[in-house]
Image: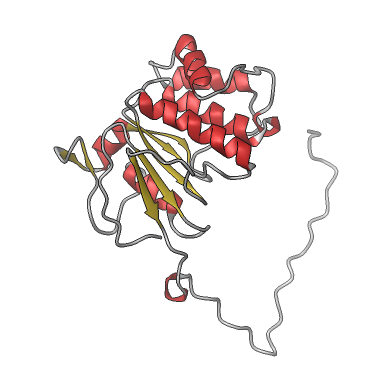
Amino acid sequence: MFEGVDLDVPAGGLLVAHGPAGSGRTALLLTLAGRMRPSSGVVRVDAGRAAGRIRARQAVAVARAEPAVGLEVRLRVRELVAERRWLEQGATPRRIVEAARLVGLRHLRGRALAEDLAPLEALQLAVALAFAARPAGLVVDGVDDGLPDADRHRAWQGLEAVRACGCTVLASALQPPADAGPDTVLLSLPARSADRLPAAPPARSADHRPTTCPTARPSGKGAAA
């Protein structure tokens, strides 16, 4: 996934782990958020006073880390809001609206399906829902996924607004923001080398015949959906 990472992100700062697909960006963010167990090393929270995944899970919320965490595309926006209110006691309707406006989402289209949202709108909604409970840290994976240049700038502006509220933002992207500030920690992750990629499956012998599964025929007795 990733290796040799040693960094210090100040409270209220912004980490941007950038690199090509497969460089370990998502795994790194989930490890920092306490959702993945590292094979070695340690994650410390609060200037090194506390260590361990439990503390990280308590302090850091995950807005998006596909495919592990993301908006349920078959739900409507109003259903996603209701779900967040049920999961997080601190995510009140007022705080959700305030968080949405903070990241640049002026209107919550309650009847819209998540899968019909524009990429920037979906990102802003995911960030607003996760930030509504005011966590100490926030993970946002794939900030620039599918975004044109203008929308990328708006996406980073929204995360900068979250950071300015005192929340430490742990983000990943293909490319770092063009106007990274002094509180931004940039971490370049290289592409996975050949010795880190999964081994290829063994080649089939010339006389190997793949097994063909029989096709089940409907009996006509099943209940109609």
